[in-house]
Length: 166
Image (tube, rainbow, N blue to C red; front, side):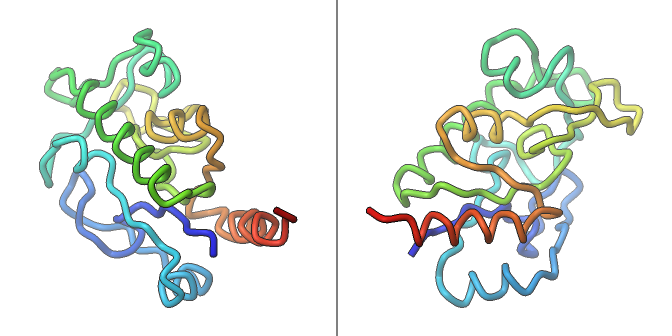
């Protein structure tokens, strides 16, 4: 049985920067939880950030650039929190490796978990295309990353992995 990595906030855990969750009421997620497939993660908390915490955004790039040391993540007070985000991404990857996870569902627009969109780094509530740090690291290691808006696609991906001949 393929396991799936899922952002903790989507499962009702109050781990977001503002101390809230972002629950995703989805039948597929409920089924996977019942089957014991879900491995829950909040990379930011794993990396050592508190809840609640100051909002943070990637400046001058995206998660791939952060991993290459070509961009940094700052909170809205100007504190560089890049190393904490990278540490959380590395621990999330380690979880995937331990559980042989090949599919992740992570929270869109997050500087950690965004799979197609992140905020622009200016704290103006403007989004741009790009990967968060954790998503970038997982993708770099061959893990398919989806957002809470693409759970049906993630389910198809898992089905294909499970029916693939060994």
